[in-house]
Image (cartoon, rainbow, N blue to C red; front, side):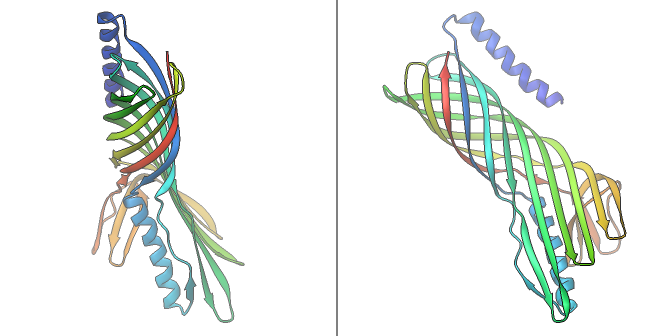
Length: 279
């Protein structure tokens, strides 16, 4: 929380100083939306490991498998920000957004004279970035600017995972729901197209570096016999052939077992469009 307060206070101080020293300071509003790609990190690694466990056990029992695991990379990115324009070319933005990536994979296991086993797996990552952006506007025509931006962000992140295996008489599933905060950095280039002196359209490409760890939350394990919960830290564990996600109140350890706090990598890029308003 202290990191977030620092970002907000810095933006407020810069705005007040600019207003005190220059009566020509103006403001603007930017709203955008588009497609996002993120790496996923240990969230995808752990989800794929659970898939591999089920495939290994099924093949060992004489089943064949159909389908495969697909990691969560693609999603949406939308948000908005207030931009303080110190000069026609220099500005400072403070805004918030929403970034997501999710993917559901389906696998079927078949064995002669046995019911089909259906497996679904869904890793999902979401984050609300609170960003401070430094802008440079380069006019290339009376109706267009090239826009450069870069800055830090405070990331309010969530990591979710769910899988369920079932046949007509039995099921088992795991649901993980955790959250964490961390810092990140972004930078990008875009174009502003003026429609009028106060309104215009924007198109931009944004790159991002943000790897967040320290996720805490709940894991619910359920089967046809009941369910139970575990609260704690999200870990990626390594136990021989199995590298999976688990939530535990103590760090998993033992002979042949190693573990580390899972890190969800929100690094990636967004391609988005929107509009801006100059006040």
